[in-house]
Length: 536
Image (cartoon, rainbow, N blue to C red; front, side, top):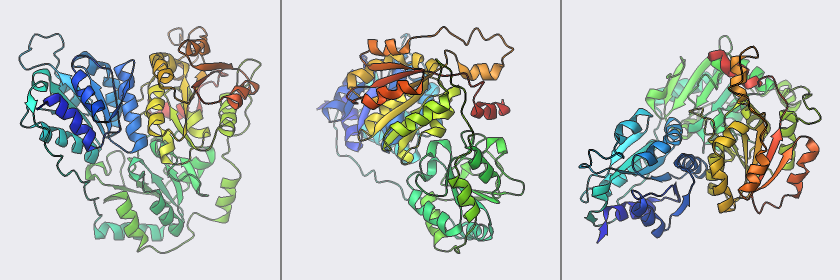
């Protein structure tokens, strides 16, 4: 006979968990042991917040449900920023958290864990007893996987110890994709037939559907772009514009603004993707396809909403639409071939490197097969816009909640999901120092990770936001030897002030992680933040 805790861990493993992340306390000790005994690799982190974001990034990069295991009360609260990011990003994540027993009304560990989860957009669930444990776990798993939701499954301490039978794993086949209605397909087909300059915007919901969208774009003459989280979806296509929005190149922004039809495929059309609407040209029609009806028009007025799975909808339209040149004219191809239009880089000094020059040189030095993770801050547009990725699995962007400090954990989770690729992290000094405890996790796991710190000795985004005339003493700091900190954790590290200092990357054997403390020149506030703060 097993206990409820053992049944939970074993069942989650059998349902398909690959890795689990967390910090073990008395409340989640038994369920974590059950996970590992059933073959799930457990990654012990230094902080629950890091564990939550690692599980999130692992899920995004691997395509599997992420698993997080936590102690009751304080273990859950420590993880809440990472859980919030996952919930707002609709990451399929299952959080196995202990909870106080119903009778422990005066326990200092006792909080309303259901309300806490619901307050950030996660789905609260509970194992109610030995008789319902299989049903409860499967319900939570299916909600996470099929609904693309972050689910907090509470495991009361008194219930965990009850005897229970594991039983058989019930059928948990994936749901049938939502097929679009015939009238909607006809309307979308007609819009594409009439368009002279169509652009496709692929979002999170388009991931995995790149081939059919490329084929449809080639048939209709559409240019291709993505939201930030879908970066890489159309990599290698000659008419790929890259990211639409704040990270757009000047050429990308110009061509999107010139479209007469924008089609958002699984894209929520937020202010970030459309630059607060300034990427929508005068008279441009806006169409949105999503498999959730309430997402249609949620962020912006649209001319047509199609309720349907991206792949199903694209295939249906492909079978009906006429072939045309559209936006894929010779002059547009020549414009794209001429380059992104960034202009010249001239910020470098004797001891400070231009962040654009740094980014471009690293892009040339690093292998094409890579996974890029990006933290939040003034710097973040540089790795996002200047580092190429091979496909949509090559870019992990945990920034729906816009929290600084998630980058290092993001890189760890992504690296474990794709050990066949080099994972490269772009982070700021503020974010790296917030998360520095997880440098121990990087060293302990022996991950061949490249950590690039865009070090301006400040919270650069706030400097930009507040303006040069404000008192900036609260957001500027003395220079920190971050390379020395990394070496203290057992990593290789170097300080980078010039392009020549990047020779260390050429000689790096990738047997252990390498951190570059890049002392970057002041950019006066990055271009993407100038765009973002227009809405603040």
